[in-house]
Image 1 (cartoon, helix red, strand yellow):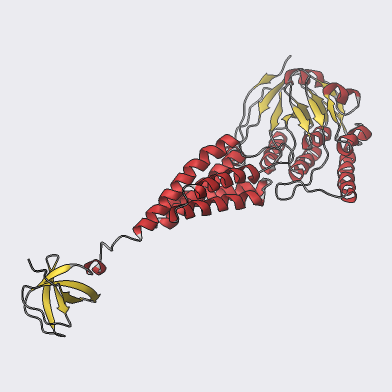
Image 2: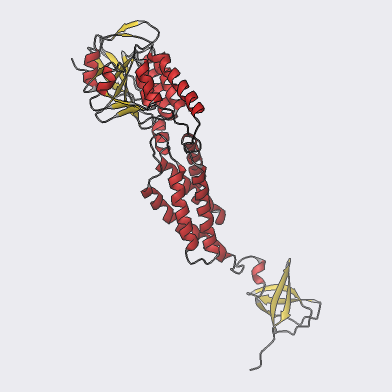
Length: 433
């Protein structure tokens, strides 16, 4: 009887009929990172709480971070529920970190037209792959192969062939992996896999024997939580770059136009989210410096006349910065040129526009407060002796005023200074008609 498929979330518990059991279905898609590792850990724990008969992890990954990979493997090896890892669908791969995860499972399976392997460790520093000497390379490979042997031998798989995926970066098709003793079987689909596993005897990592009873099982997908989906989305290179630029633009707007508040709030949130995502990604500092250099060029363009040279330089610097910012040595993935271009040009225009507004506002005459009285003209209300205080009318208001020269009633004066509530004035010379 083929397994039926139902859906469950983190908070749902599926009631099964007597004699039925769950197959907890998880997915590894994209690069292996801490968010994905946390999802797999929670899925295995949920399967244990539900007393599932099997955890089925469908995988299509180019690899990922070694720490996250080891976290997943540790939970697979320690799982109380048998774990099957299945490279699927056709065209999928379980490369690099995925190869280690595949071989750690109680049952390793692949779909037709898939491949695995290419598991040589890659040392990444600041988003770039340094040239390392032969001794260090041997130490890294020796550590990786020892880790691989530590569980492949107990799983009854071929450790010598598995090591070639590390030392020689070899990759294997599903048939090569099956005939080489790296996986247990090839299945066309999840239902076909469960049908082939039904009644199969397996040896757990602790040496105990178990027989899989999947005749009346139901497939229960375990989905990413809303939080994990959100975090998984913002760690994508394109999303990180957009968040970073929006954050910089928001803070820049708030600093140049204090009191707006909203841009500062949005910018601060975006900067923090970008910083969180960059913590998990291979970041090249040269990319960050190029983006900052672009911002400087845009500010200088507003201040100096460069006939567009500074703007052009800033756009080029930001495009290069986006290209260099995130570069995974595993997938070669980074910020796409389309997203970089779509963000850079509006950012350049807004930066120059905002800075020009700031510079222009500094040349404006004070329009509020007592300072705006300086330069204004008024009329003397009564004769004022030199050095004595009298009254003048300015902008329809009466002010106390003092002058170094005598002023006749009705004469026109100009305000030259303000001291508290007293104005300093001088007579306006009348031009003969």
